[in-house]
Length: 335
Length: 221
Image (tube, each protein chain N blue to C red):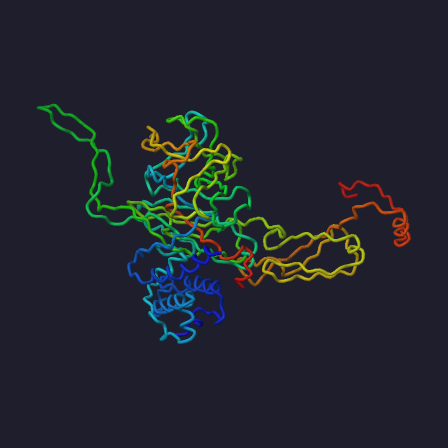
């Protein structure tokens, strides 16, 4: 089997690309999502095997050299386990229909974890590995009391004399104890992700001894950046230039979030507050990563700090040949 | 960064172990020791009294009248989750291992208040009251606690102490229990000296693995 082809990645793909490809395809190829495809289970297994090998640096090396037959241990694809790293314990949400089957089953608490994310990660995407250690309800020997409730009992004390008492009555259920278990989860930070978006992991919340566990949800929180400000898919930044540069022009590079350089070349006068729009240099759009917003650069000018000498003042008057302009007006009302 | 190296190596090994098991529940083997990092959410167990640090929307009836902090025996209460954050905004980026001697804030996940102490007496034992204070994770300078541990970083397997930056007391439990409406919960307070009563261990939680490179990750591409 060609694992690279199954995942749709080049042979030089990084681990991040492989995780991203797996996550996208796993949602598409899951058998429950393709009930009419007789080969759905097989395709899904292939996907799991491909990820298992290519995500492990040792196994990937072996595969690259010797092919699938050369893999030392073979692979017992319990694909369900790989899937749960990305989506949680009990499956997944398709098109926003969570497990609403049985409202009567009690559910453990959901946990919402704020995940801080940098603008660099919003631009290029990333995977965050997280270890989830949680209590899991496991069968234990014996029985326990459950569904306890109050009931009224009527007892006869004598002819015509009755007494009503309240009694606690319980059912018997299989005994359950809480055991701590761990697994690694992979949270994907998708390019273009917005503040407040959530990534759920089904069944990874708190357990409920009489029912199902709740969910774990990661909520994206984009942190402030020292150079760029985000507005939707656009990025804003400021550049301070010298007085000379503002008058005679300049060349410069701005280093973008992934390290590539955005070149700016000015040969005209740049006034303070001037804005330069660089289309396509903003953030990728969440729904379509191929569309990018713009980078808007606002210039401000640094005036000389020391006072100018008499000579310099005369020189400047000669150079600029400007008369006196002293226009008084109400700037706050647009005059 | 040896600790990050260990974290990375464990990943594929864990995957191997998980896949070897055919149990549908996937009973996972424990990952390697691991460090506690900023941004992680966890429950803290007092090793002496076997109760977890806990808070809830119930205020003290005395002292400061702020939201109460207690110790509970249950291991499955979502109100026992606390988030580890740096002392200042941006002071501890996601995935940075917490160093021994570093000052952190512990934010109660469900109510958004920070673990806090001040010069008020605790209701049962007369030690220093420990409360939960602030709004949406923002409180004041009395929310800072120094992680006291041996070695370089806070390890998940280690029992550590939390010493308050402002008043120098240690986060402690000595066994006093409340009556109604929080029957059976233990008092959590601040005590002046280090002892077995103020050792805490990270238990259940969501632990962000130490990041292999600085955020800005040019290597990823």
